[in-house]
Image 1: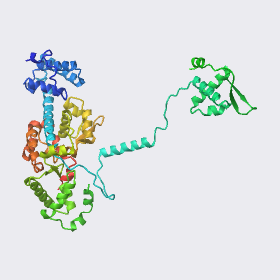
Image 2 (image 1 turned 135 degrees about the vertical axis):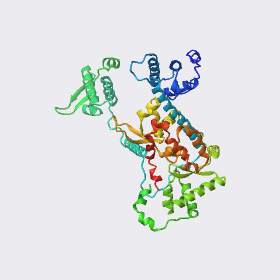
Image 3 (image 1 turned 30 degrees about the horizontal axis):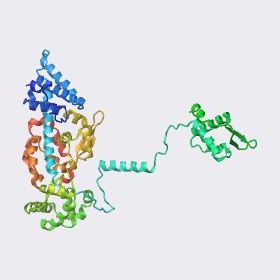
Image 4 (image 1 turned 90 degrees about the vertical axis):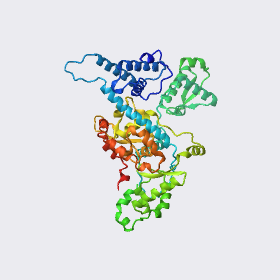
Length: 255
Length: 242
């Protein structure tokens, strides 16, 4: 009998969906027509592991519980062949498994009946739930946990809408080269002097202002721009000089 | 819902004699049932109609049998401790065609298994359910919870204080049960309960002797010994008190 269901002859398509390892074990017991209370452990274990192998071949996701039951089956089988320690009570190593299977089978049968009833009753149409306008006053309704969860969800949704993330923490990267281009372009386009404070004040972030300041210093060093002030403590202005601004060179040097 | 208001002022209510004649309240009763999506308890019906419970019961029986005899499109059923009207099963195809409904969402076998375990052993924790099923059931529990067929019922006073789960009145309605006591033994359920569906009044007294005797069946003492009392603890108690 075991050959009939051995791994090689097992039709790979004939694997029904089992709701769990006990379901698979029950299926094997049924097709072998053996009793739950007297399971031929060797045959059933062999077939069980063959099923797991077949499932694995089909790339079915095998839950760990299936493997755990396979281990349990092998353990029970090994206990049956080992001699009982002297004085140990005479007990069938399979009894605990049989008890679990019988219990599981009961609920499985109930589930099948539930399915039948559910199908039959799906044909009965109740009146659809509609909003019956209620008087505002004195109305107390039973509030379920679901309603509370729903309220909480709507509150959090509303809160999220009303309060868009106030502070978005993002790592902003500013490059000195970009700021150098920005300043030169600005000066060339306007053809006028630019107050340094105005330029730096346009920067939205502290890091950006620092970068822009560094860019200004670099341009001064290269002689592309010149910083000056009309008198001591007067505003510092930036002016474009005659020195050419070599874009490629800047790009390569300052990233 | 309306019970609190009623119990607060029993004297003022009792001053007016309650209507005893079923035929007097029957049309109003019909209107109430017609307007209600969820089952209405006899107590609520009696209170709002200012009638006796006996009159309500008689009027309900009259409506039920009239619907049965006259070959009507609707039927009266008792579920979750109350009464409601539904369409007759033979018009399912017609209604689905008209309302353009293809299929109602089905419960998977895993979900039904889990539901059966909860129904018979409530209140029960997830680890206890998984012990019976031998497989992780968290996802299935979530589905049942979302479908409102189960709900939490406190926590078990053991290490970790896991949530206890029980079935809801939504479960009773869906499966046409009046109370959890109507849950038949698994062996009986297939043939008996399925057979009661066609009879609108059958749900009021389903399998009385069979269920009672099987509850005391010594063969089932492993799981059922302590569960039978649990069935009575359900919230439907409100509707059942006389």
